Amino acid sequence: MGPIDIHVQRLLARYTNARVLEVNGTGTMISLRPVDLPPGWNKPATEVHFFAPQGYPYAKPDCFWADEDLRLVTGAMPQNANTGTPMTGLGKGALWFSWHTDHWNAGRDDLLTWIAAIKNRFAQAV
Image (cartoon, rainbow, N blue to C red):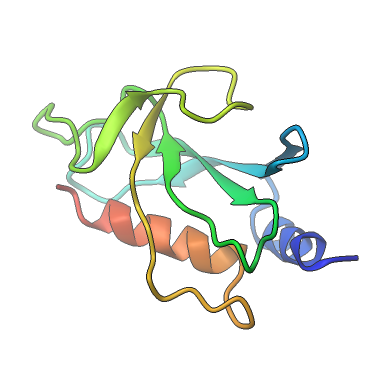
C-alpha cells in the first residue's frame, strides 16, 4: 500500500461521500460533494474535484474544479478561474481554479491538506 492509498483512506474516513477515480494511469481524481461555501458566492455549496498526479505526494496536487455555474454573489467570474473541462475524468463542464501551494511537504501534507487549501480559496470570495 502506497502513500496515495493511505491518504485516500484517510480522506474517505472524513469525507464519506467522496468519489475516487483512477485516470488512465496518470493519477487519481477525487470528487467531493457537496462542499459548503461561505458568503460571497452565488450558491451555498459546490461539487469539488481535484487531481493527485502520478508520483503523489512528491508530485503535489495543483488546481481544482468546481461547479461550472459557480460565480461570485455579484455574478462575476472568480479570480484565477475559467470555464471548461481541462481534466479528463469529470465527464462534464467545470469551473477551473488555477490555485497552487508553495508550502507542500510530501513528508507531512496529504489530500486533507489540499482540501484545506481549496477551502481557504473559497474563503476568499474574489
